[in-house]
Structure formats: structure tokens, C-alpha cells
Image 1 (cartoon, rainbow, N blue to C red):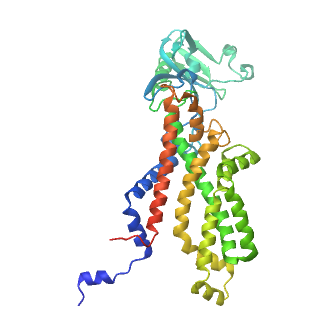
Image 2 (cartoon, one colour):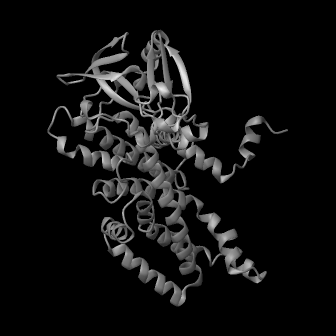
Image 3 (tube, one colour):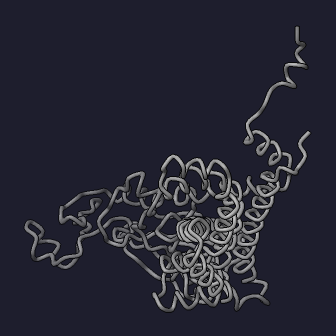
Length: 421
């Protein structure tokens, strides 16, 4: 009767078991995977965790431009007189929530309870400015008051103070009534905010932390789209060249050599200039310049595999070339492809950052890391604006390093020569 140890010796594990075991024994690869997964979670949550959840994190004010990390200010929020929209969860997650307010950083304020006028001193300013409490708190009607009925007493202004009551016409053209005390209480609750900018602000007075978080989504998105394009083009051309051979192989190999001989950044710039500027153009340009590595890998592997007996057996059974390649050959290339894809992911992120730095990638106000580095390049020697270039540069470096560590770990894991104890 076999002992437990003897039975364990007879167990035959799947190759994927050994791949996982080799991978998780590689500490640096696991760290890289951890950073990548963390970035994916940050990118997915996006607007839900950003302090500034407006589209593109573009809610700023020039009075607080280039402030250091940890800067705090009292913010007065004034209604923009636009329709009040209640966003859905999907809108909050994908597109962000347009702000109903114009933000004004202030040092102090006071309210005249008789006239409902707010006097405040703008942050860094000298003079005091004044604004109507009703205009700051409510979204008022912006059309011609003569078109409304029953508002004869309010022809000159969309609001009227009558003793302790305040009558105002909302954005929809309806008259509403509120008391002075409730209006003041609403203002101090909803329109005054103590805000801290943990990573400082940029030259437009926007929150750097929010823009850095959203930049994660941009970088991972361009990496994903570029990889999908490169895999589609590379696998297709590499399969044709490797499996069919002959003149087709010669033509595709010649084309790959030509593309390979052109510096990647120059080719990306040429494609971007030809197609125009924008984030989607950057996606396509990067994808169309990273397919050669995949095509060369697929071509070489297929040329070695197509002589195997199982391929000859498939041909003898009458299977078509397309089915043989897709069902019987390409699955054997999964490991090497994963390694190249992870490397291309890092290359795509780095290339997009370079494009945005040159003004050919993401366009303002979209917060790409490369664009953020470009906006902060003039403050490299400044102690006040150093954070503008340091944080996005650090994010790019960490992300590229994480994908490189992951790629190296996958390469070693799929290498059968690696010993596993």
C-alpha cells in the first residue's frame, strides 16, 4: 500500500501550476504586479475617489496657482446659474460631475443680514469684493423677466427681499420663498468649504492629486488600446508570414524591417501629425508602432511549430490554415506573447507621455502625466513649483518600472529551465 509521500510523487501538475509557482517566488515580479493592480483600481474608481470630481479635474482658480503640497484655503462656492443635474452612478464613474459652482478662494467673509450681501477678501488680494447671498446660494433665472407672469415686483432682479422673506426666481422660472436665516444657514453649510490640496495646485489653481489620479486612467487606457492594436496587427502579420512563408513571408519581413529601422518616437510623431492631435490619435499612433515585436515573435514561433507532428496531423485531417493557426498554434504562444505585451504596455505609457509633452497627445484640459510634466517644466528650479513636475514624473517612472518587473517575472516564469523547489 502506497504511503502519502509516494502518492504525492505520482501527482502530475499542469504546466500553469509551475508557471504560477515560479512567478510568485519572484518578489520583484509580485511587487510589480501589485503596483499594476493598484493602478488599475485607481483608474477604475477615478472620479469616485478624486477630491475634484469635475470632468478632467478642471475646477481651479488662478488665485491659488502653484501652491505647495498640503496647502489649505477657504473656498466660497458661487452658483453658475445652470440647471441642477443629479448625476447617475455611471456618470459619476465615467464622465465626472460638472460643477454647479464657481470657486473663489477667500481669506475671510462677512454677511450683512439686512441686505444679504457677502463681503469677502479674495485669497492673496487687497480689496474686498461683494456678492449677493441669493446669487451665491441659488441657481437663478437667466432669461428675460418680462417673459414671466406674476413677477411684476421683480422686473429688475430675479430676487426680492421683503422683510424677513426672500423671494427669488429659480432657473426653471418658478418663484420660491425662503427666510433670511435659512438662506444664511444654507450658504454657510453648502457654499463655504475648507479645502486642502494634499499634493498642491498647478498653474491654473487645480488640484494636483485629482489630476494625477485621472492621469492613471489615461495612461492605462492608452497602454490597453495600443496593446490591443499591436496584438491584432502583429499576430495577423506574423501568422501570415510564419505559416505561409514564400513571397508573403518575404514581403511582410521586409515591411517589418523598414518599420523596425525607423525610431519609434519619430514614427509616432509622424503618424500623429498626419492624423491630427488628440488622445485617440495617440492611441492609434502608439499601437501602430509597437506591433513589430509581436509580429517577429509570432513569425519565429510559428515557423518552428508548424513542422511539428500535430500540425501535420491537422493538415492530414483536412483542417483549414485559419483553424490550424488559431486553434492549434497560437494557444502555444500565449506565454511568450504575455511577456512581450507587458513590455509593450510600459513602452506605450512612456511613448504617450512623450507625445503629450510635445503637445501631440492628450490636449488640455485632459490631465495626462506627460502634459502635467510639460506644464511643470518651467518650474524645475523653483522651490514652489517643483511638485508640478516631480509627482507626474514619479508616477510615470513607477508605472513603467512596475510593468517591466512584471514582464521580467513572466519571462522567467514561462521559462521551463527555471527551477522550482
